Length: 296
Image 1 (cartoon, rainbow, N blue to C red):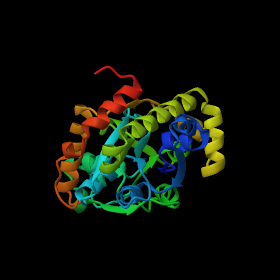
Image 2: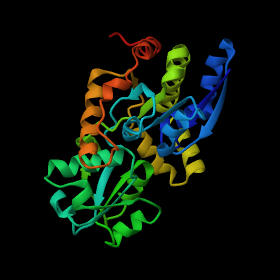
Image 3: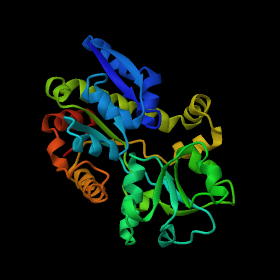
Image 4: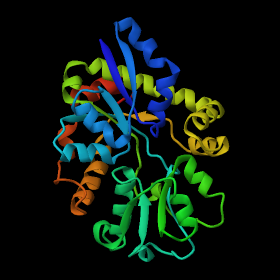
């Protein structure tokens, strides 16, 4: 059988796993092979739902959107929280969150950044859909912020550390001070029902890849910069702040996701309100917990 893995380039665990050969080594004795499919985070859920891939990973928001859209997916594992991974950057004219009212905010719409901005605004009496203009971030975002053409930009990874090397922008809020900002891994319910041991093996390989990256930050940064662009030093700084640790799905994680779902539904971002616990999979929890060696 061929196991098809979706690789979102901004998911560091999957990204490094796809190039290290660790999963291939674990699956070969089981008679399984691997196909790697590079795919955007916002496309991952649909690719799982229609069978193009069997397993994928994103930030926290795409699985919520997928559930609201009726895709029958289940959670497999999550990363530890990622403080330092992302932040809301502003120019000198924005001093407080209240100053964002009426401003354009660049962000990766549909990603964890939507949850972050929505929760941040809500905690200050503002509304994502009413009080800001959310614009999809792109190559011009850093320059637009420096020149004052937008009010704020949610940056992450190497782009965040590159932006911080200029005096023209400053950090208003760290994402980790507002949300847990985890990587989230998920699969189709049918695949979880029929091959839970394979999902457990994938998670085990992801943890091995995390261990490699944590011990080899310089090599990981050099490879990523060569493949995705940016400065090696910025990638090294971005990778160094990641926890490089996976966890089974827990009640605490589900509570985080439910809070996010409620906020996003109220902001009109989700198609409908959802009950996050409905896509927890008990059998998968057991398989993943065993592979990660976690006592529960």
